[in-house]
Length: 201
Length: 202
Image (cartoon, rainbow over all chains, first blue to last red; front, side, top):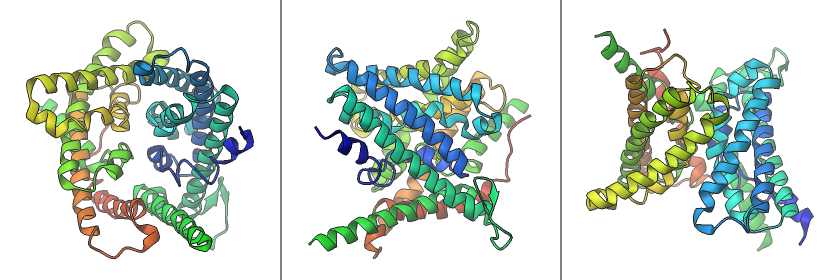
């Protein structure tokens, strides 16, 4: 088995947000700035990696009829740990910006999707790398959406001002801007794929 | 009287002013996935409203009468809520199958999908741990029901838009989800017009 490939595939080729289209809700709600997006990405990646490892370890013990509830319990435990860790060590403003979406990682389709599609069928190392790659891909996607929205909507990037020439368009940090940015990004990645497909033929 | 006004305020707030889908980004997966036809959007909307109302009642009781008195909120809230919601969805599915085959035909295929709908767990958390103020059971139930109603409004509007989109010439790269998100953006813009009508918080 090619472990390197398991790691790399999640970053671009099977990017969870832009290609498989999983985990849209937090990718829109918390990406009002690049930093918020990054924090959410780290939290989701941490849960994804740890749950992938545990699920891969228990995959022979769990009967297949009740595997989904078992996976959910494993994921919920890790989400609770991440939630408590973030509340303890991150600035309160950042935690309240992420709000309800940290506990909602439990129902994020990426985590359960990877558990079902990969970790339940593969060994521990491959599952860890799959989780790390997918987590990194999701992290990068959230930072990208967050950066675009912060630059256009607030005129800053990672809270650094980008000069007076850039007039902030507040709409991009609000709900409609989120949908627009994600829609256009999805269209852009679809266009890239179609162009590559056409070049191959 | 005040009580009824407050319930109406909560209802307007979660259904229009801060719509679950268009304002709070909850339940986007079914919103994009199940809105290609109006009939299925309606079925999903009814099923979600039903489950959200029931889940609000059950999770609120667990929070108020089990987690808070025993000091378990921090560690067990998320885990217990999701398990209870999963069990509740299973139970509702079984009850509907036994009692009303017609309703089961209409809702059955949507019910299993609802466990992982973040609007359901979202409303449970927004009623309890992440609430802006302390809700009573009735207020929490109202938030669940009207939140579901708001979800249904968004689903029906979106399915109407997408049925018309079928016949229009969309650029190839934007077909499917991208154009759906762009339409959602315009709908969210329209819903921002409601944002001033009520504000919550005492």
